[in-house]
Length: 114
Image (tube, rainbow, N blue to C red; front, side, top):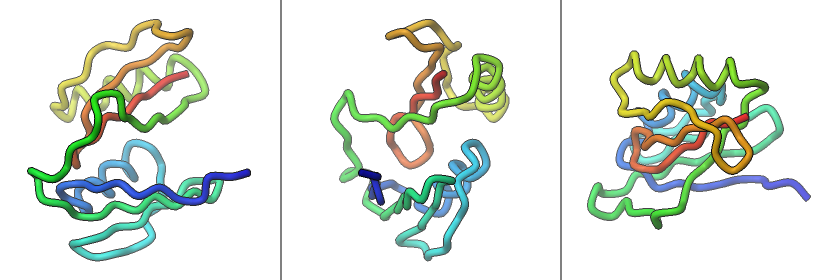
């Protein structure tokens, strides 16, 4: 079985799409101010739907993860995010992975790990 698509409600679909494409190599598939579509290399479709800031609320443990090939790549992404001014903790060894979490533009948590 393959996960086909995932829909996230975000505060700004265009900004969130651009951010995910830049940092995680997702391919933009078009859209408008209210919805953006992204694709990954395995066929997953990620849709970003605009919601009001007060309506974009995820449970505390909700997150999406981007697995990387090695610790060096995790560290590179972490450094690049810090350079852009995002509040990002340094990677650490957690649950058997080299990982870090941060809140992405749009209002959801992302994990980067290997």
